[in-house]
Image (tube, rainbow, N blue to C red; front, side, top):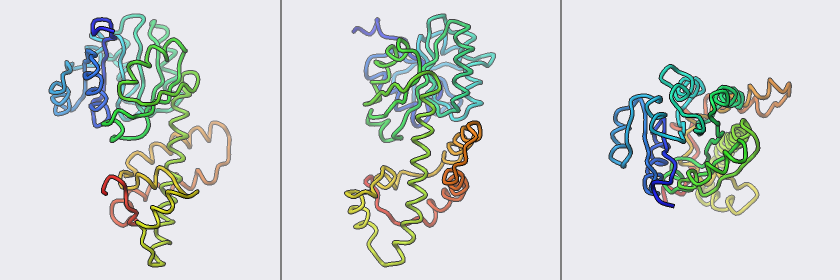
Length: 280
């Protein structure tokens, strides 16, 4: 496929993850237009070969397929629905891909608004973190109509080694929420297991190597040094909202929501000395 036949791609939010994604898109020959509130990140986007814009609406006028990579639901809504947002300027037939981690109901509501304007939503949160973004080995958990999912596949394959269609709009975010719930269960467990193991005098590096060959293995243990708990409370608040909406009693989930509030401080100041692969 020639460059002229490729989608014109926009990215709103070129932070640590979005900038890495942008670089892969440019490398694969896509015309990319970026927007971010941080001028330093916009400068990096220009240096990587992208055009830049001052507003989401300007991105929309330059793109057929726009990826959103901002942090919170209210920011996602503002990017799409604001007076200088995407829907104010996108042409019918365009796609908005939500790669932020958001509530399933948020993307479903946006889907209803977008369809009324002739625009499709691709629910496409991503997993595996910043180093996978650098390597182009992210996982996209995707929800949407089959034709929208297929249209997004070539774009996301530029920075994702895996692209999993889980169902309709909203199901991508459900998949990301369940992924993150299991991540934080494992990560909190590693704090407690590590503290207990340290009392015995065992070498945690040797123990970690053994556990990674055993039934106690997890990605949280494998990538321990990269886990910061920065987004853990936000993730668990999404879990809690889903739990309350379903009327379920999930005591382990409730405990993890409380435990992650202190886990970021513990991880930064007094965490068990599990050895992570990136520091070896």
